[in-house]
Length: 144
Image 1 (spheres, helix red, strand yellow):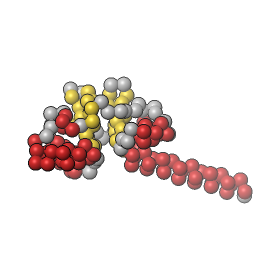
Image 2 (cartoon, rainbow, N blue to C red):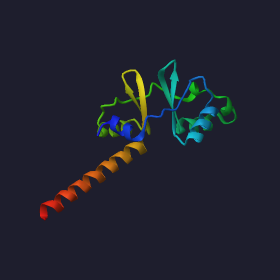
Image 3 (tube, helix red, strand yellow):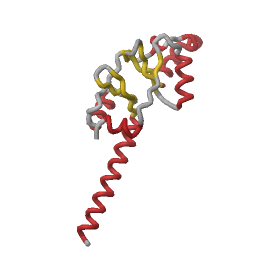
Image 4 (tube, rainbow, N blue to C red):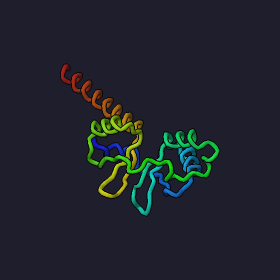
């Protein structure tokens, strides 16, 4: 299974924010859209990722100053990414090796989606269930 196949199932709705945006507004967008990350875009170019991990770390570090923080102050700069033809096992390995829960999918310089660890786990489970049903059907038909 390839990352583009997971995106096709999941959909390619993208949630972004500018680096000069306020972290407070980013939190609002994440809560309202029930998402765990935002891609930080500057003039059509991916410059970072903001996830709940960075938000919590910023809240811990800055306490009262949290409301005035800019996204660029706490985002992950130059995030790792994969391309649409990356095999799911390579994607899982990349996510595990970098402790990344959200992985942007880039087609050249174009952002085409973001995959979460949950998206990957769901896709793998569905693929395994499908293969399991096919094998059971094959075995049943062979024995008849």
